[in-house]
Amino acid sequence: MNHLSKVVASALLGLALAGCTGTPMKTQQYDSSQYTVIGHSEAKATGLMLFGLIPIRQNSRFVRAQDEAIKAKGGDAMINTQVQESWFWAWVLNGYTTKVSGDVIKLKSVQ
Image 1 (cartoon, rainbow, N blue to C red):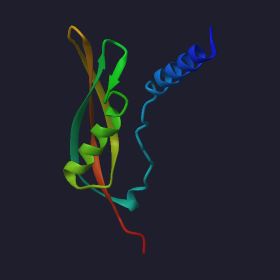
Image 2: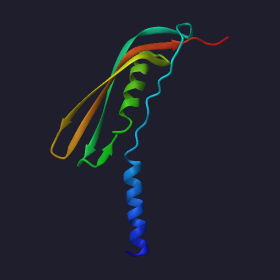
Image 3: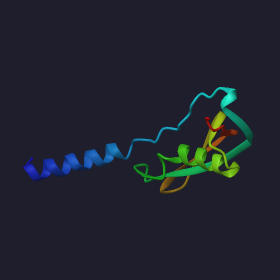
């Protein structure tokens, strides 16, 4: 294998591995004196795997669903979080839908 082939193979391997990383959901423990519960919210986000290899908005779907659920109530964070997943199949892709639900809270300002 010549030098150019090794560089190309290494670059493709690096891109493939980078495409397989996900974005972690941010969760934090709060004392009940730190927040006010605004109400229950839920949201969904979908990601696709084209040809079973190419992720399209796949790795960020947990965070997107959580952010949308918080935004829908105008809050700062979510507690009592639950995550559910479903999937679907089509000829050239698989789809994965994540539903995040929980209680949205507004943090009290520190004085």
